[in-house]
Image (cartoon, rainbow, N blue to C red; front, side, top):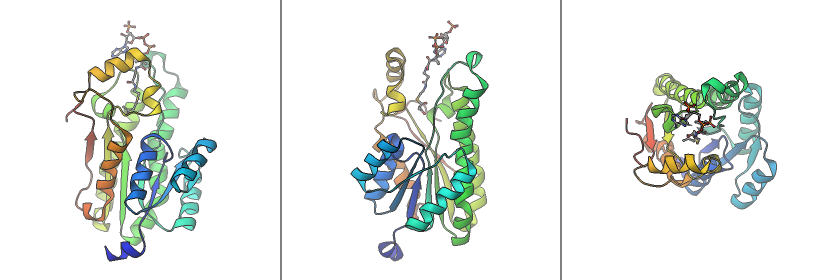
Length: 246
Ligand code: CAA
């Protein structure tokens, strides 16, 4: 722990400049970590986030392995070795399966699931060499419960959970923990884009009677990435206001 006082660990958050990812980046910064936030292509919003928070932002597409390798190298050159990786980048293309195109299927799998592989693949060698790592994969309540209109998203997010458990087994002897968080419906742009009737149905299905705040999801990340959380490995932490209990 004393080392941390001198040289805080570096955390990289994908999709880390807005929504849940933005809250995670800010929460980690508030805990004293050095934080890098990845984003895809919304440069103006990302620059505004960087200016407001002081968190450096880095643009690349998580669906592209070469871009992830280069992106992690850029972060490490700027801030130091990545010890903490939060795979938060994700998209939706909600539509019933009988209307879903192959493109709508592939886009979600490529960003949400393959993006998780790509980012872990880019960061894992360094974690193994240094014998320390914390990976948190942001899944979804809908991976556990299923959701009409989300065969693509639920498959990707459920895939992240199997990925999490398997990588947790691979890193365990090297003090690399890999855990997932399954957020419920959260007050972000992704959810506020839903039609009002759908939103109303969602709210009545949450025992807490409200959406989560992004900060409430970030709280779980702060807990899981701590050095002291070394024995928590391979879990899926639900933060959903009681919507789905598994
Ligand atoms: N459950 C079961 N069936 C449903 C349904 C539901 N929730 N919603 C709609 N349907 C059915 C309708 O009954 C209808 O059936 P019939 O054809 O037999 O009459 C059919 O679907 C089509 O209905 P609509 O024409 O009204 O719907 P649509 O095709 O325009 O859209 C939908 C359907 C894509 C499911 C749409 O309602 C939707 O987007 N729902 C929200 C999905 C959702 O919750 N997304 C989460 C986004 S946030 C997120 O993903 C973050 C996270 O991790 C939680």
